[in-house]
Amino acid sequence: MSIYNIVLFVHVIGAIGYALSIGTWLLILLGFWRARRIEQVRTLIYLNDLSGPLGAGSAVLLLAAGLYLALTAWSLLTGWILVALISLLLMVPTNALLIAPRRRTLVQLAREEAPDGEISEALKQRLHDPVLWTMPQMIAALLLGLIFLMTTKPALVGSLLVMMVALVLGAASSITVSRLQRSQRQEMSAQRGYHKANAGTK
Image (cartoon, rainbow, N blue to C red; front, side, top):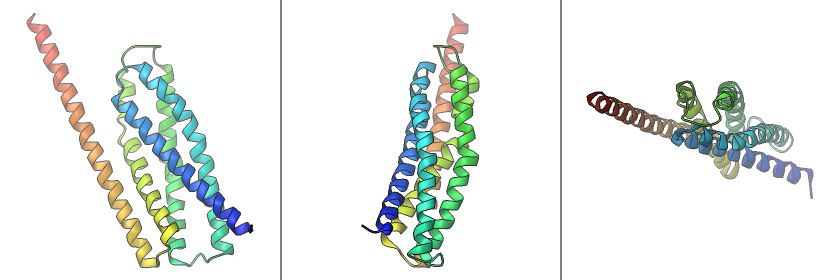
């Protein structure tokens, strides 16, 4: 077994781990979105504590192994490698700078809530932070594009087209979820107004 095969295996494991981390975070967000009580939110914090280190470690493996393979077996000027590396170098810092701090703040707020009861307004606002919802979906779509590049190895133009399609898919998913959230908030606001009006007439 050659060193190339071992490093390639590590690279693939890094991609799988990073994808699992992003996917788990999206599931956690979905659970947060549907949660009505703080007990439900706390149940999801355990998953968050697992997915965070998994994502960080996988990102290191993905980048380190990818750079090694690009420098030793390929060339940084190869079309799909150039596009993939630039995409990775944009995705990982974006996750670290925009998503990770918000995750920590969200988890800290959840831990500071009362042991039980309904979710506070401050936590609700954090749960509906558009960055928390938009960026993971964009990164997930781009990661799917990266996996496509790794398996098919297209030329430069094809690689750029693949990542553009991935970006469009991520944006479309983010817009769809944003509209669903807005619709749900409007329905909940209308229900609260209806209940208050009924309470006032009694």
